[in-house]
Image 1: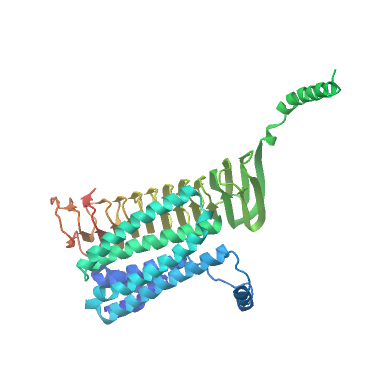
Image 2: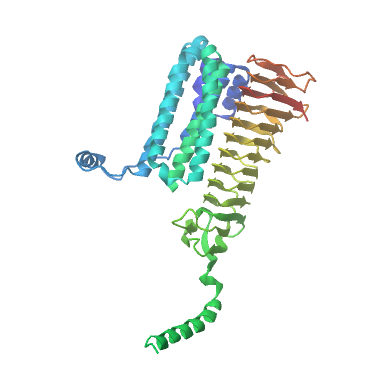
Length: 203
Length: 298
């Protein structure tokens, strides 16, 4: 089985819609092919992240009249639920977009993938974390001080790891393992911010 | 004599007579004791909220919910609603500093259960539907065979002795201990340690920590995958000596010790250490920025 065929099957594999024999073929191929294994891991991470999204977000009414009224009217306090959901959806969309770009580039230019995709992927993660941070900062007062302290302490731990990995990757830009470690730290940051956002929703 | 003195004496007598009576009031004035029962379907969806104190949920072979417990004075208000396909219960409070309530909830074994808390410790046992537990600083414990389990804490520890098709455990500052596993397992921590003692063969395992250590003991099924990533946490793997697997171990600042072959530690400085204990087995991948990696046979 070729890498192209496996990559076509990966999406259905992580959604558990493949037949048992096809599933086995993908797993066996991924066990011997580092790039497909990486693609499979990325797809699983993406599936896990998107699983956190609500099944659907239904607007309660036609939004434009309300939006236009608010643009014209006095400013009011943002709605926490909508803010959080929009931030969450935006962050996942950004991560999903960067993962899709990665998968496409892996297929098109496997030899250069690590070095050429790093800025695009990192930009996606940075945008996602910034969106979540903005949403969280606006509602931070709804979290208990101890929770904020825990959040900030662990964000500091992640940011230090990101800084170290990024510096090492800058010195060795084609290193896939360093890139994977950097993305792992970013995934942790996105997940932690999503978790904090959910706490705000519940508060 | 002042005209106010008889009135003062009268008030004193009234107060003196009321105080002993107040002492004899039933304790329910001070604390709310709960004992409620609701009929639900055997696969009902049940949401439980209790911010502080403790919540214990147990699956049983009856089509009803029974709640017992205590809400202390100032601890909020107990509520319960719904029936049939779904029910919601818990303690509401306007204050995060409210004294903690104790709830014990029996639910149909096949129910889908959500438990949310802030500082309350949560225990779930014997539930076979989906289980979703979320807390901020409380601890989470669960056992049994849920179909799927998700446990999430900000600063609390997570201790799962469950066997589920899908297991997700996530904490920022707490530790994670998994003693059942099997199936598809993801455990993620920022600064807490992860310890996974797999009582059942692992199909897919993904263990991630930034500064916490990661310990794995168990067997990865043929064709299965185990991926571990840390920034500077120690990684300690113990697999059976007859485990067939391709190992791909990378650390940039730490050392790799392959005790399976008796080799001493090497410092790979970012170059992957690859070895195989037999073709056609599992795939074990470890990446660490600075952590030491040790693989041993158990």
